[in-house]
View 1 (cartoon, rainbow, N blue to C red):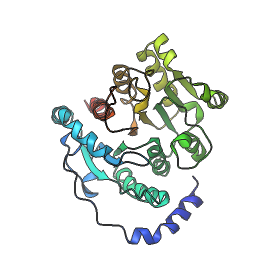
View 2: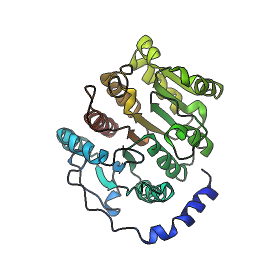
View 3: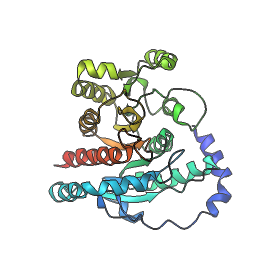
Length: 309
């Protein structure tokens, strides 16, 4: 999305912005029992948690916060030992009937985080939550951004705009991400993805399928992903679509343990933002995505704290 398009969205949403409700009350349970924050309290924070249930389950951020309470001790210990600071900045108000207005609200919310120098950690909805985060970061970064996406799909479709399936095409169009610094880990190799794989290879982007992980091992794959995403870049963005894990959406995928290990490796390097998407209610006999998202997000917090040690 270019600046003209952003300006158009601001104009369209002008009346809606004027009528925005007062900020929501702090969530009943904050992520890992971190303090609920105002814009002023973001200053000096390393990470700011933001709920953004775009296109997905509206209660997803709150459910992840509840599940994250079991890791509250992790954050308390890390804060004592390293001084890492995490703030829960609440949720973006989603207007299901007006995606343009929702994106403007997301930009405002995330702009507060980025302006304060904190890295946003998004909890949400479908994978489209990546788009507003990268649009806001685009306005901050002076250099290129590296991306490591753990996803069962490549999401390189050109249309529709502001959608999960086109999120990385939009990121590449912004110009802040060079294809050679774009890495997808966990792609399942489904037949309908043949075209996207051809595009990915033609762009010289890097992809590691579930089969590649099984052959090379997750530590090797994660280190290679980090090296490719970091080459010549200013910072790193990490995206986790929980459907990449076996048992969340498909019996084939990465193991939860492998993903946890990989996140610890790639998140310990100039992290400028992360998102966890695909959180859904229930487990349907498989892996419950709420508990998984809480644990993996806690892994990112631990990795960021480790950088300060």
